[in-house]
Image 1 (tube, helix red, strand yellow):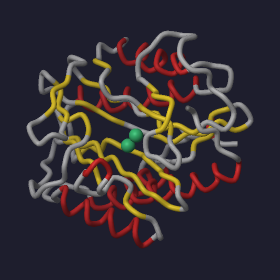
Image 2 (cartoon, rainbow, N blue to C red):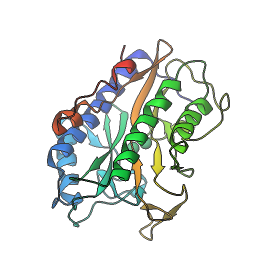
Image 3 (tube, rainbow, N blue to C red):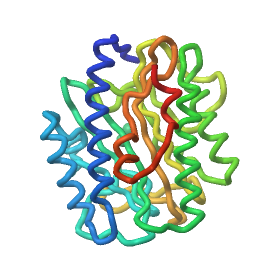
Image 4 (spheres, rainbow, N blue to C red):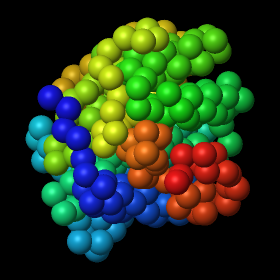
Length: 267
Ligand code: MG
Ligand code: MG
């Protein structure tokens, strides 16, 4: 069942989402060759707790850390470790926070120093596909419209859309109804309504869409071991339109990136 949120609840969710956004901004300041994912995990946990929130993933389904950190061919759910990041890596950093009883859930894929041109393009197209999807997340449309937009945009570039993992409703639980696949058919699936809040999160592979689960029981990798990208925003329906609750603003401030990509999703 889809849980519709009141305006007050949406404002509380914005607070949770912004804690995650700021945490990703802190990660952006520290992420560089030689840093380990476990060091970044500590920074994130401290930052979340300093803001009166609780790490959203730590202990969720028994996940052992604050961040899911998934480098290169890892799609999602990578576990932080002591291996230093290396120039040329990419890494999906997925972070959750719980405050006032509501979750924020938000991810960005970082480039470590200079990366290959084809990987740069994968990151750019995946992030653009996130906004293609969000544009279709409006009252009266259906869940399939969002998935179609993401799939159509990324497959045009020859990329693989992961099928087994999907976006989701968000609220007092990390994963609520409805599921938000990154593929689908126009006009199909549940109807999008005022007060819905979801996490939209394309997971897009440079090569095949097929994936494999690693022996740790968590890490998901691409079947062909080519790179995979992942970007995630929390979005509410306000006045029938998509309203971003999360923001990449803090990441961009840390990285010196100028962007107005989020403007159309603010009221
Ligand atoms: Mg996430
Ligand atoms: Mg999510």
